[in-house]
Image (cartoon, rainbow, N blue to C red; front, side, top):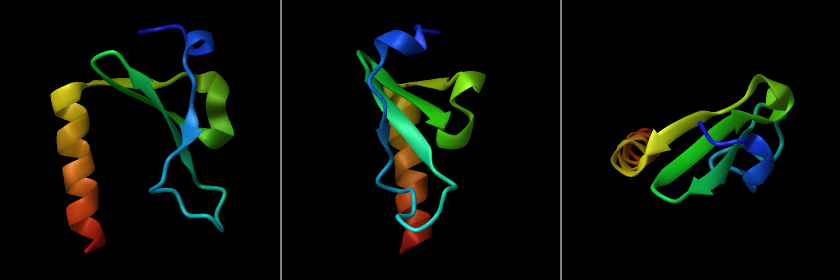
Length: 64
């Protein structure tokens, strides 16, 4: 798992703008890292590119 200090996290576009229940996403060379905005010290989850693509597809399918 990459060091969090070397990652540039941004608030996920799938997080609501009016809620504090948010996740942050950072780009990895071959995927993405995700962490809880309110619990940043807990670390992050890393996803390979194919896993991240599948996760985003599932999220998008549930929103429509």
